[in-house]
Length: 247
Ligand code: NAP
Image (cartoon, rainbow, N blue to C red):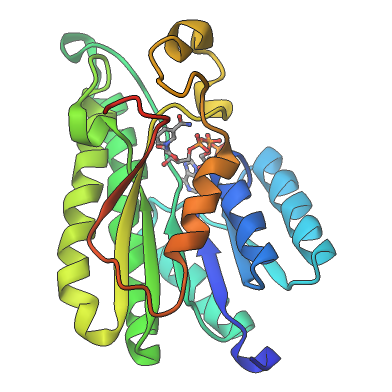
């Protein structure tokens, strides 16, 4: 493949954790990368560091600071990505947050913040990217859901609802976009060692995981790599990556 049509991936929330590992894995596979990060100084520095690492792997990468809950800013990000890198072959909707609490004590703010960040953003980012992929007549969309979106989890009514929504959205767009050569799948991680889970009592959790350990961001990145293949004959699926936690 010549440089002009080099495969390109956009990963949201790619300055840390799972998103960063996915970006690095895709770079190793030969992708150019758009590293989306939350536009605040610590994330900007981490995103720039990730870009440097990708360049060290011999691939082009750009970092774009953009709050994925801002629909207009997202449209501008996608325009910039296409202007600078020419195309988008893979989208990883990864940005996400938690604001845990029991239902009866959950504030409107914590509900809305999680819904905006984990769910509305997936719509805002996928809509303009799907237009780009439709013109290309190919594309792979990968949405980061969670086992909580399938099984629920006490204390996470907001988070689990958004992840269930992401699964419904994934299955729907898989049907809608298939005729244009676009596949859409979701990943449902269990417990993965990242800043999101660093405050949890991991010893207690590990005791319930058949494979006996929390997953690593690289365990997720490995599946993202697989779901990014051209001409993939898998769409509308939810792939559990949880060490057997919910067998
Ligand atoms: P993480 O390290 O906190 O990464 C999430 C990333 O999203 C951060 O870089 C974060 O930036 C970014 N982000 C948050 N809000 C954003 C916004 N409005 N615009 C752009 N970026 C934003 O957590 P992670 O564990 O890697 O999580 C990645 C995804 O996996 C999430 O969707 C999460 O729900 C899902 N997941 C994780 C686990 C797990 O066990 N870790 C399990 C199931 C699913 P800031 O650092 O500034 O917040």
